[in-house]
Every structure is written in C-alpha cells, then in structure tokens.
Length: 246
Ligand SMILES: NC(=O)c1ccc[n+]([C@@H]2O[C@H](COP(=O)([O-])OP(=O)(O)OC[C@H]3O[C@@H](n4cnc5c(N)ncnc54)[C@H](O)[C@@H]3O)[C@@H](O)[C@H]2O)c1
Image 1: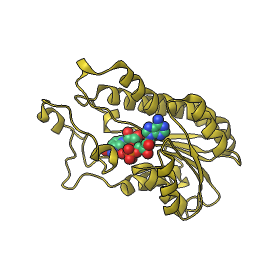
Image 2: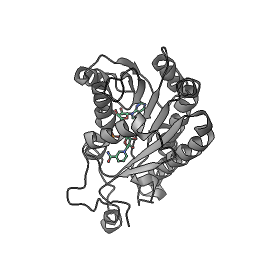
Image 3: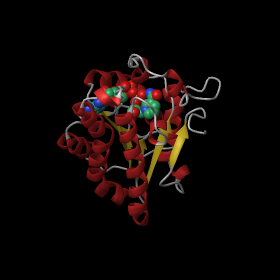
C-alpha cells in the first residue's frame, strides 16, 4: 500500500475529484482528514472510504477556517496535503462581477496558500508533500473564464515557487492540471449566451474519449503524493487528453 502510516488532508472531498482521491488514499492505507464546505457530501464520501476519516467542514472563503482545518488534520502530524476544493464561474469579462472575481481567486488560489502556510511546520517535520489542483486553465488562456484562468495560473506559480523555497528541507510541491473531468462542476455549468464556440473548442480534449473520470485524476494524486514520485517537485502534470498540447 502506498500510504501506510501516512496522514493526509484532502480538501474538496465532498464531490468529484476530491471524493475519488479520498477514496483512493484510504484504500492505500492513509489516515485521511476530509474537508469541504458541503458537510452532507463529506459524510457520503466517508461512507465510501475503506477507513473512517476525520470529517472537518470548512469554508475556503475564510482563511481562519482554512487554518483550523489544518490544525484538526495535523493533530497527530501531517504528511500530505491535497488541495482540491474549487469553483468555476464562466462569463463575458465586461459583465463579470468583481465580487465573483474575488470569490474565485479566494477559493481557488488564496485559500491554497493559507492552507499550505498553516501546514508547512508539520510538512517540514514529516518531509511531506503537497499536491495542488491547477487545470488546463492554469497553462493556457480560455475565453469567457478569465477569473478561473487567473486563479489556476496562480496555483501554478505558487506550486513552482514553493517547490524552490522548500526543496532544501525535503518538502515537495506539485500540481495536477486536469482537462475536462466528468464531475458536477462541469455537468452543472451553463455556458454564457451568445459566445463563440469555436474559441472554446480550441481548448477541448483532443483524444477520442479524452474526458477523464474523477478516478483517473485520483490515480495521479496518489502517484505524486507517494514516495514513488520522490524525485518530482515543482512539476505541473497534465491529464487532459492532449488539451494543451497545441
Ligand atoms: N471538472 C473539471 O473538468 C476540472 C478540470 C480542471 C480542474 N478542475 C479542478 O478540480 C478541482 C475539483 O473540482 P471537481 O471537478 O471535482 O468539482 P466539484 O464541484 O465536484 O468539487 C469541488 C468541491 O469543492 C468544494 N468547494 C467549493 N467551494 C468551497 C469552499 N468555499 N470551501 C470549501 N469547499 C468548497 C465543493 O463543495 C465541492 O465539493 C477544482 O479545483 C477544479 O477547479 C476540475
């Protein structure tokens, strides 16, 4: 088992990729704390896991809530943090509200820094690692989603900078850049009216059947967080059916 004796914090675990990752880490022997703003969803996830997790609701809009989540997860030490919570808001930029812009940045990027900052003393002690969730939108521009794209580019920058800053104390930082994944985030998102679909299709997966299932992405979280990836830090690993290849 990949994570026997390891303690992991997984956010966004009430749904989609976070849920699949929590299930996968528990199956690999990790002692898991799951966090999300959706408490009912956390309980549903817990019922699917091979071992009983610590369930800790939190709100990524609130940095104090992020720090409390880490305190709970690190009660007996902490080896791994998977930052997976996120929100997606589409819209033409001329009408996009600044409140929505700030919310997307806070949930997708600022809270990631707050969680990592709180976790660092524990990760340094454990020589642990962090796997963040970027996106294809962290590597290329995508029309009608400037806020989301900016937030995911921020995740890429955080990941690389922290990898450099903490490599000398043995803490690794990587990010996963999924393309299209079949989760409620995508299934429940309506495109704005009157948009240029040709622009959007430029960033569609290229492989036949290139859309991922959450378990495909969970597999990559497990690999990067494990000792098998001990030489990988500062990497942004795509799983996108060729979406950003060209
Ligand atoms: N689905 C995709 O196609 C895709 C592609 C690239 C990247 N991603 C990223 O993957 C991650 C997981 O997304 P998903 O597709 O599983 O979507 P999802 O909507 O199924 O899961 C997102 C989770 O984040 C939680 N969340 C949202 N706001 C929160 C807040 N304020 N505080 C705490 N938790 C909050 C939600 O409750 C939900 O459980 C996100 O960071 C997303 O940006 C998704």
